[in-house]
Length: 346
Figure 1: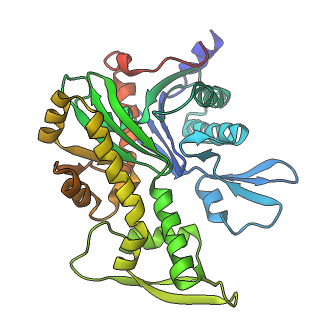
Figure 2: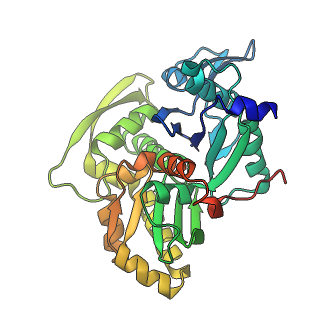
Figure 3: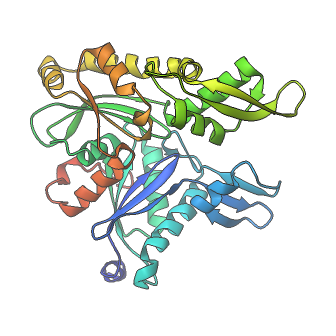
């Protein structure tokens, strides 16, 4: 009863709890939080020093007694207490303007397709401990499809490939349910790791993940570009330990990413092979939709289209599709009630 009373002064929230970033949406203001899923902790006092953007700036630059960590790995919670503190910080931040002393929002939150009951319960418990009075679970791929404005409740197939920060989810959706799917522990973060590994093997340079991400964004591609582009890559020489700079071009980055791109394409094909023929016919007509930050890799849509012989398009603002989908669900809970997953606490 007390939670219901406090809930009147709280905003209902849609949350995309990602390995790389956390996004939160409200019905009245749209996306209000879009920050890295990073928490900085002082190990001497066990105190949280910074969360989100402030903590991300500290990554790789902290003294021994301060650690900046990602509390989610591969789309699931790896550190329960830190995830709870991070969520509480973001929920309080959303309600700070309302002067709500104890926020008790209703929360729609996305979870991976291959999540176990234990992992599902961890998400529910962390969200509840962070202040939620009611938690509605929805599959991330379903939320992404709704955010991409696909008719998920209709009797037609919609194929979505959500390349997030921790996982890639490939799903065929029809009549408000996931018909066939595959989840890969491969994502935008893996692209960064591929570039780090390539720099080590080809140039004998150790670079950080932030440098690798910058290279991926500026010159990364899945298909050859009309003109060659290049940029400096700075890191530590593995031979003498001194700083070193070399020039890397788009074809070298493409070579670094090729294995991961190939793996995604092969799993899209495998998902299509498992899909009933009537739905494959719909997909051939309607095409494949790419969402998630990883889908913005240049030419990835063309590479997938060429390999599958199916039209491919990237959703508008692909990195926010999941949270926008959660926002649409909040707007009409009755219409989308059939897509909610059962609670692990029952």
